[in-house]
Amino acid sequence: MDCRALLPHELPHSTPLIRDFTENFSHLAAFYAHKPEMAAIEAYARQLQFPVERRRDVAAILREQNLVLGAGPETEKNLHRLENGAAAIVTGQQVGLLGGPAYSFYKALSAIEAARELTLSGVEAVPVFWMATEDHDVDEVRHATWFHDGKLQSLILPPPAQTGIPAGKVLQGSEIEDLLRAIQGSFAVQGGEELWEIVRFCCSPQDTYGSSFGKLFAKLFSSQGLILLDPLHPKLHAIGAPILRDALEQRDDLNAALLHRDKELEKAGYAPQVKVTSKSTLLFAFHQGKREVLSASDGKFSFGGKSTARSEVIRRLVQEPEAFSPSALLRPVMQDYLLPTAAYYGGPAEIAYFAQTEVLYRKLLGRMPVLLPRADFTLVDPKAMRILDKYKLKVEDAWLGSQALRKKMYASNIPKKLARSFEGGLRQIEKSVENLHKSIREVDPTIQGTIARAERRIRYQVEKLRSKTGQALDRHEKVIESHALFLENLLYPHKGLQSRNLSFLPFLLRLGPGGLGELQRLACPKKPGQHYIVAIP
Image 1: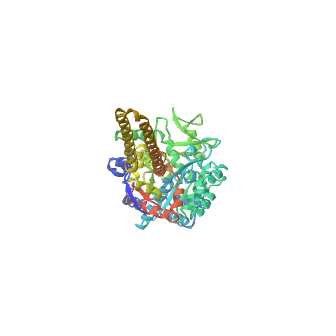
Image 2 (image 1 turned 30 degrees about the horizontal axis):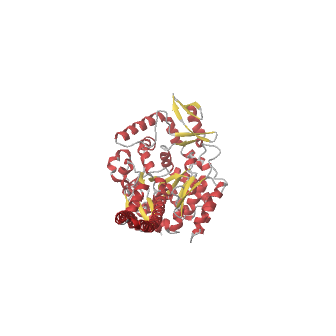
Image 3 (image 1 turned 90 degrees about the vertical axis):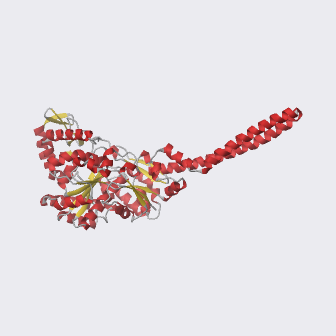
């Protein structure tokens, strides 16, 4: 694949923190445990100690989960390696419709490639994908944007009848069949039938967002042996209960440490990603099936509209660990308590909140994995490449916005200039005819009728020329508008990066069976944080 790499400062909407994390890490070193590089992963993995019994118990649960999701023999091999001492290269994402935005797939590829390279260096490693099934904001995951024939198609499932339910438990329902019918035509290409069968199998009315996402990733990453983890499993909550309990018992000290960290970040010029207040805790509680925020006030915890003594909440956690789940800041610590994590691949928002979570790692776990930015891509199909070449543009020009893009397209296109020149010439002809009419009338007023008829004929021809010019210009402008819209839909959809706003499946249709492997090779852990502009077939 032809590609070129960009750094975060060359991308739209990048934040100071993510730019410094990749390009000036020394500015941020105080907020993370390791430098984001492959050497740090290898060094950390070699000295990582992890309880054998916990490793075995978690691997048994993951074997059960991945078998249900339809994982293949390569995943079973990796589970066996995990049981026998391999480190985990972890990533994760909310369980979105049709696999979520494209970057969900890029996260998986990042973890797979890093695990492969770490193994080649002599340290056994396996890729693990944490499916964020406990997140209860279903509005974030029940939609997808589908790119086909230059157009964007919005795919949306209705909201669940009850709010606050973890996304991993929400059925997609019969409406998923209507949605699949709406995109079925996209798969009418060479090799599309196989992917269509996978999508149909993974997106049934009986599937939840969690099971649908898991089955899809299990199928598509079968040959790479990706291990999927669903944190909703009650046994995982039971194993992770000590972390949840510590977070409750040490709530005041942890909250003070987080508030102090927020001030440190602000002093350094960075905005904290996750808001922490004096009433914040690090847990959610399940109340009548809903995931409720657990707050602290006056020595008590409250959720579901009721205030409860801390000792009573802790007692309930000990008895029912599955009734509690970690917040965004605590989830990484819970994850790395359950897994022998050597490295985690995250997006910009995750990298930002890990700067806050670092204090929790130190106080609750005593270790923190290497954090690296996931690989990211903008995929450019042949039609887009032709349009870019025609107007002498780069992908970055599409990120400038509609007005700037069109200005560049007109500036590089000759017919627009010719049309303006021709219009000026027509106005000059009209002016000349008017002057000639005036001069002749002064010489011989008797031929005024003849002059008037001649003038009408000339004006008729001028208007005819003007009309044809206008039609030509209109056609020309429509072509430019069509080309600009195509570029915006593909390269800057909804005024954001392609990887954040478009479904990956239409691109996978173009890439074909070997496409994931080619992108995986570009997701090189030795060059973290780069954004690749990739020409695809």
